[in-house]
Every structure is written in structure tokens, then in C-alpha cells.
Length: 265
Ligand SMILES: [Zn+2]
Image 1 (cartoon, rainbow, N blue to C red):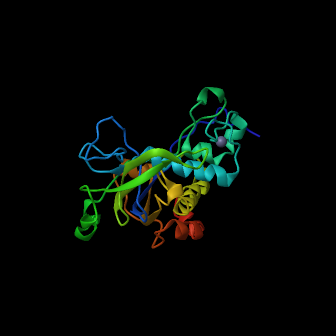
Image 2 (image 1 turned 30 degrees about the vertical axis):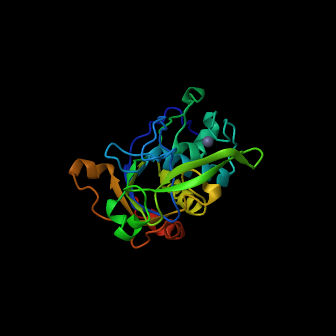
Image 3 (image 1 turned 120 degrees about the vertical axis):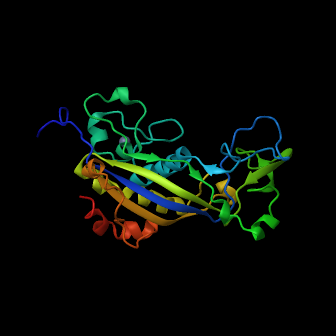
């Protein structure tokens, strides 16, 4: 068999995934705690430069990765029970590392390591915060909850430790979610489905913090997938057709992936 070593990987095209993330139960992605209480909150969510909550692309990408790692049964060889291939032979057949990328790339010398997936920060759609929702909210875009700090090891409440927690309320929508998936080889088209499997898993898990208290349930909606092959960039004919027809949820996309995949050519 020909060695992969000298085979140059060349971009065949890019898949673009757009969509929305609907918050089903209060979402809390922690922001930096500066020591200064803003609006009386001990623990704010993360805000963008315009003072609006957002979902960092790195948080979303990281959560999807950790869920698919457990589902694929890959070796959890890094601290925090995470996975990363440390041999070229393993990497070549590992969809997780190919899609989500690897850090310690110096361990792998004989294969190309090109991350397939890039995830952008997802802004809050202000319009999704209705007047009715605002009546129950303490701040412009978030609600404040009082939570007792729990000793993680003993499972008991820490003495006198009621904290004010900031969270984005149920009903909020973040859009536009934008993911870019680079296709370098035919096999990348097959493993593309893993992203939607990870989204399905996330819908039955949680995003952000305090999932054990019921925070962070989300749904992915109105997903649109576009295929821009390399030649489209030369002709300027980009994003002309949606390739996932009316299949707009992760579950529908996974279920109908064979017909979607046929359009990636
Ligand atoms: Zn791997």
C-alpha cells in the first residue's frame, strides 16, 4: 500500500453549516469573575464586547468533541478524561482527531494534521428575548438565580455559600451558528456526519455549567448545509444551494445523511 507520508492533502472544498441554538433551560457559560460585582452578581455569564451574552465557539466545539469521544470509545489518554491520538497510524483512522484537531502535533510526524472543523462564536439574537420574558428577568439579557455552592466531594452545601448566578433564560435563541468544515479527502465526507451525531448527543446533555442542576439544555434548529467546492471559489459561485433539503435538525440530518452526502461532490 502506498504510504500516506508523501501524499499531499489538497482542499477539495468547504462545507458550511449554519443554524440556530435554542435555549431550553437556563444557559450558563461562565464569564471571567473580576472580583467586581456587576449588577449584584457573583458569577456572570460570558458577554461580548457589546455587552450581550454569546456562546464561545471554543465552548461549543469542545463540548461536541467530549461527547463524541465518549461515544466513539476512543482512548481517554489526556488529563480531564480527554482524547488525543499520539501516533500517526492511529490518527489516520481517528475521526475525532481529524475533525476536531490535535494539540501535541509534534508526536505525529508522518501524516498531515489538518483540522477539519472550525466553529465561530454564536451571538444572542436579541429579538428572541421577548417583553414577557423580560418581566421575569433581573438584567437586560439574563436572569439571576440564587444557588447554594455544593461541596463537590461530600455533596453537601458549603456553609453560608449562597451565590448569585447569572444565566440566559429559556426561550433565548443564539444565531447564526456558523461552522466551517474543510474537506481534504474523500473520507472526510463520510465522517462529516459525526458533527451531527455530536449535536444529537448534546441535545440530550447540557451546554455550559451546572448541568447537574438542570441548566444548559439546548436544541439545534434550522440547520442549513452548503457545499462550496474548490472551483466555486474560483468562479465566485458560492453558497448557491442548500444540500440538506428540508432536514434541519441533527436527528433528521443523521437519519438522511446518505442522501446529503451524495451532494458533496
Ligand atoms: Zn484520535
